Length: 241
Image (cartoon, rainbow, N blue to C red):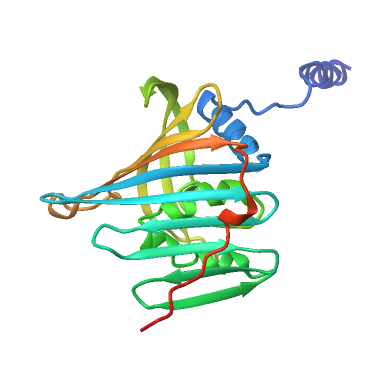
């Protein structure tokens, strides 16, 4: 009887506790709200800068993004030294053009994410950061696809705006084997009012030697739901000479 009563008490205690609820950390909570905000935008635009700092030199590149739901998109990356990479879309397809090759690639509906495959390398990561958030169900990779364990590390002014500072780990994951590579610390500054991302700093991957270390800083001047004319999205690729 004592065993029976003990068992009943155990069951009752478990029932009173209720289901186990997983609580999000403050950093996870901010990123959850950030992802939901970007996915719900009707339109978006930004201008930005990518600064890559090496041991003895640095590169500075610029970019601009325009987006109008559900699929109008234009991203223009201008590389230090004159190279250029553009991704744009219309109602029928996504397209990409790289100045270095002079080749335009076209990707019909259902294959649009392939336009971004080369963007991580060519654009120093800038071509995938925000698009992966705007097209949240596309499976696009990039820095935010596997941004894990963000910790809220206080607030800071960026461009005159108060921002949350989140410190976490970014990595690339092979789809087939799930192997993790390019594991690196990433710090993200998120506007406390608009939840727009204003700055991202990525450190060198773990195990990088001092001589080959590089820090990549991407800054944004973003606008949520701006009025955008359809005329700003088409791009006519220059004819290869």
